[in-house]
Amino acid sequence: MSKKIFIFTNWTCVRRKLDAKKFSYYFSKNNWEVVHDPRKADVIFMVSCAFTNQRTEQCVEQINRFKKYDGELIIAGCLPAIDPERMKEVFDGRTVVTKEIEKVDELFPEHEYKWNDLKDENIPWENLDLTKPVDSMNELVNKCSLIHNSYNGFMDVIRHSLLYDSAVMTWYGAASENPYFIRPSRGCMSRCAYCAIWKAIGKMKSKPLDVLIKEFEEGLKLGYKEFILDSDDVGCYGMDINSSFSELLDLLTDYNEDYVIDIHYIHPHWVLKYIDDIERILKKGKIRRILSSIQSGNPRILKLMNRYPDTEKLKDAYLRLKKSYPDLLLETETICGFPSETFEEFKDTLKFINDDFSINKTGFKHDFMHSTMILEIDEYLEEMYRQIIHIIHHGFHTRSLKGFRLLNHLLSYSFLSGSSVAFLLACCSFSHFSIIS
Image (cartoon, rainbow, N blue to C red; front, side, top):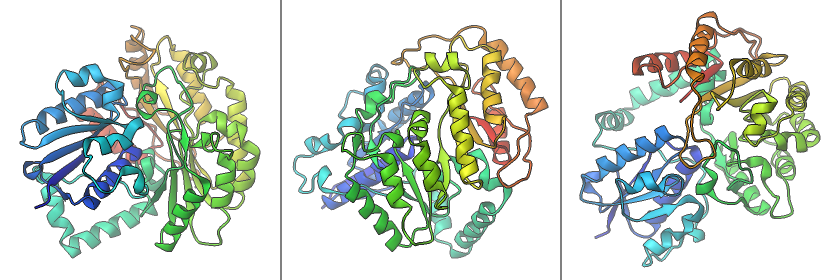
């Protein structure tokens, strides 16, 4: 009788969901049965996120929940590398760190199929936990064709409405009908002051160009029309294999097929490096969306963040992209409340993303990881937050890419009550600016 494994992701990025999907295939190939009830599992395999302290605490909650079951708990993902001290307070079992993901073979030496023998997955893992009433209900709903078809019809309406371009709906391709993810590289070359993710993902390592082309062509053959290039920093692709991001992008946009490509997480300095190539490639009409995180519009704050500080050059580059292909959906992420940031400096960020061109925005209230260079928050932020609430009531208007005005920008913070956050996040479906803690 085959052993049973339950796989779970804890509100992770799509890259960890892709890892989880490959774990599912890895265990299935090695004669494990993947189950959706942790009570029935011999092994509970949790792929973790520790992007912020809040995510770490969510992991801790899940660990304590899974420890109640009989199956062995194994923690994979980023938590073991980013915040091992906090993890060890509640867990002392076996782990698999993202940057050494192939070492899962050492945990299961009896496996015939090894991790590196299997190709990467292109469709993210979706949790299904039958101990949770909502998941059990969803399982039943999916078996009802009438309800399932009604849901698909509703999502189709969303994709052709004002909501499609909102920050919440476009997060990780959520509004895409059926996206096919391609991960050009793993790891990151940057060392941003606020980020501890690099400790978990390790050094940048690119996939061979021919492997990526094969993945892309397989997606086309399967009938996919929407592709998402998603890496920790997709712009650094090829630096270790005598290739480049622009070479990859040029090849992927040369097919005479009906498809679009979204680009996730290209660092601004790579946009500057490849601006001429990207500008030319955009004119092919295959690139629908680019997510490039500016994090701040203030040079002093950007220097403290260890990021490219010349905001004028960055703004000029983004404007060139918009002019090259006016239908481009350009998105960014920002951090509000970086240590020593004044409200006037925060307004530089607002000005950067609202001046001259339209841009979808997702923001983050700064949440301090124990393992980053940033250790404490300044007291001035409470006053800053009060002023931001004032902004919520008065609003900043922006023009969308399709020429219509959306509702006032809404910001939500973790210091608000749970009900307030839920309300604001729901409202963000109609806005172009959201702050997600």
